[in-house]
Length: 155
Image (tube, rainbow, N blue to C red; front, side):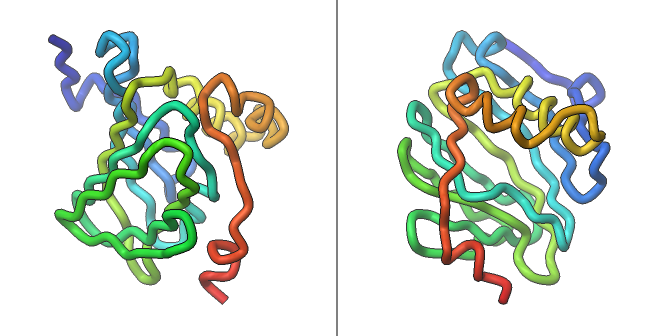
């Protein structure tokens, strides 16, 4: 059993528009899953189109509304909605227009991701580059892909 108390969870918040609370990584779950809580404030870019080759990703909306690209369709998820994205499925997400989005993410089977989120934090702080992130796509099973639909969704 692994218990993560709210006061003990690592919070990555150098970008106040995108706050990630690290909950569980495979080292805590015997490889079963990875989990975080994400708060994306109105206007945040969210996550660009990407896919995971080895893991599926579950999203549970705690509050607000989240626009989700899944393959070639954009859906808006609202408080209480749950969406599962299977492995090898292109997806992206950002808060819906005029909304914040607070949501739980569960990736299964688990793939070490805490260092990926920490690397994104370093990019925001100017201590790493997007090229550094691109070089970790295989390590963290986070592969960036193109989506003209997602690129043009906000005009």
